Length: 211
Image 1 (cartoon, rainbow, N blue to C red):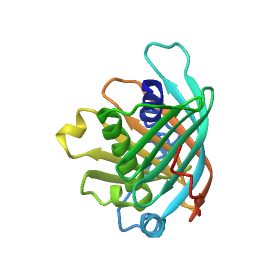
Image 2 (cartoon, rainbow, N blue to C red; image 1 turned 60 degrees about the horizontal axis):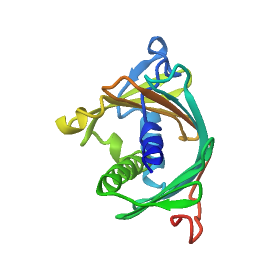
Image 3 (spheres, one colour; image 1 turned 90 degrees about the vertical axis):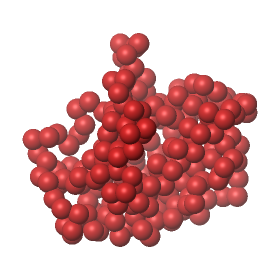
Image 4 (cartoon, one colour; image 1 turned 135 degrees about the horizontal axis):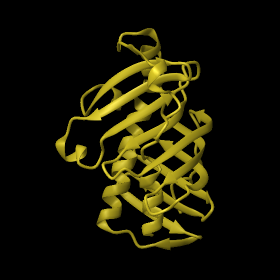
């Protein structure tokens, strides 16, 4: 279970050499048409499904750990994070209910697990809805780049800042799809998560948010 928990948490790590390099970034204001189009799209998004590939770079390992899977989300507060390779695992959040399984076997869930996965769900919901970009819980800075709209988020809560230094999001400016996600942690470990085949307004099945 701990491996599953770590897999999900680590999927939101620091990407060294993030695709949109600093030298090609042009700062823009929140009132820019590109930003407003993204925010409007976020406000109308209620559910999504996407494939992901993640590379986990850990201090203890010389080479990154690569895994693939599918993320499914529905507002409010429903998440399914499914890792298919190399080791199958699933984490499901449905409101306050958290369920975890590994290799098809359900694991016990601790209070710490519930807290961690609830925080992850809130983070994803904030990204999807655009609420994370409103500047209340994080200070948002926007940039245009050759690869899309880059958003940097700095936590304003000192407690959060102890665990999270910065969140960086790269959106496609045409489809408004989140292509890459980075969360920088004080430890220096990082993970790059790339999303593809994203679909919005998905009608998830009745068992999607169950094990």
